[in-house]
Image 1 (cartoon, rainbow over the protein chains, first blue to last red):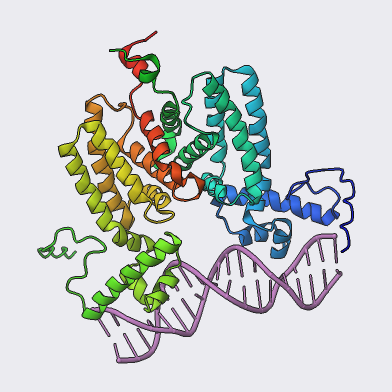
Image 2 (cartoon, chains in turn cyan, green, yellow, purple; image 1 turned 180 degrees about the horizontal axis):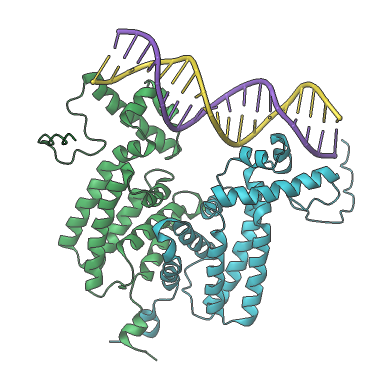
Length: 213
Length: 213
DNA sequence: ACCTGAACACCGTTCAAGT
DNA sequence: ACCTGAACACCGTTCAAGT
């Protein structure tokens, strides 16, 4: 048997599946960026289920070029959402440092709901991803979930949030409310329904403080 | 101008878009029933997004025959769900007559969540329908919603449920939880997440009974 | 009256051929 | 190394032709 050659020292240990186009050919980098910019417009118009063919057409790029850069629809979505995801992870640190635990959690969840409403159908995609953990989006999504879990556990340690919910629970519940209110007559009730859901996360006060009456 | 001829007296005032195949030709009725039975199997396997072509194939029926009986996917869904919908409306009457208001509501919502889990993707379809009220499913769905609204308003009158939620709110929230838990690792947490959501529907006890501490 | 399936316009995905 | 678009296997929908 021939031993595997030792891995050459990688400058970037975790380049990621859709890493920034650094040392590619110039035309490739231009195409990558242009496809991404076009996809943002098309998905904003038609939602996450937009035709990838249409994206390629409007980017004036061969269909195979799109698939070369983004082998799956989720890879394209991941590239589109990475910035917003990173921003939300940073925000969780900021809120944890500046706000009391419960307020930090609820404010972050409201931002998460707003972010999940970026594209039609995005909330459903985010929930669906939890089925196959190997997808491109799953990695970014897990980072987001663990950021939320940190805020949740702080609020739970404070006794502000019921102890029998997990980070995944609050993540999917928030995303679900975002999904409901992304269009139609429910759109104006987003904040309200989010508030109802957040109220469900509070510990039952009757048991906590004992019977009042 | 010629006046519209007066409408002939209809024996059935509300036959519905997918009425029972009464006085059709024998082969048509057989096809209708057979397509329906096949669709139930295929949708149980593949969810509401199953290929209608596949349904026609497995029913050994021309593709046009399927479209003749069910002009849209929603018409097919409506025919499939009508029985379960009717059962849920009846159940709301039974519960209203036999259980205290709050228990009647929560039990009915749990049944609704279970029913919405019949097919993969069904909860999402039920929520999406509220956008276009002219769809075949919308009519049946509205009946279901108003049944839930009756139970809700009873519980609200009793002070058991916060007054600032509507029947549509609880309907979509319940359906959303059903959507989350229809598959994947969340499936076992359906009852629990439903409980969290239902807790959110209770009036805030701190304000209600005054400060405890 | 009803059934049939070819025809049309799409879609996602792959891959041999080009530069 | 990368781009291109034809080719393939699907899909939903319609409709002229049959019985």
